[in-house]
Amino acid sequence: MTDDTPKSEVQAMSCEEVRDLLYLYLCDELEAEEKAAVESHLEGCEECRKALSEHQVLRGALPSGFINRKLFYYSKNA
Image 1 (cartoon, helix red, strand yellow):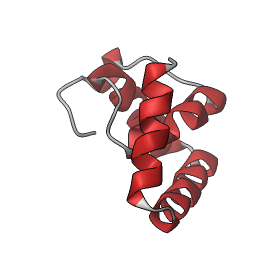
Image 2 (cartoon, rainbow, N blue to C red; image 1 turned 120 degrees about the horizontal axis):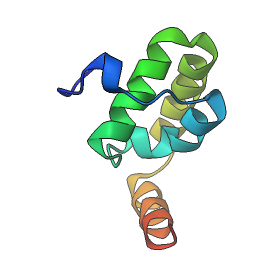
Image 3 (cartoon, rainbow, N blue to C red; image 1 turned 45 degrees about the vertical axis):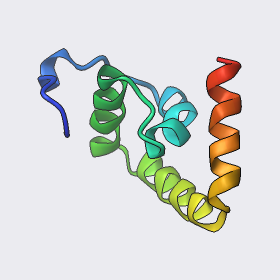
């Protein structure tokens, strides 16, 4: 994990919760606690790591302007 949150204090997340946050995770837009929970889940879940990899490929294929507008939309409407 990349922050100082001890693993024992990280809130467990379901696959559905993690997949809902993958886009924000890739954009480094999660709070430290959420980021730690996503990373903890990814360590033990092959299916979610595969979903993350697919998001990375898709994100790499999109123009950066599109990604920034989409992130603005999500943050504004959250």
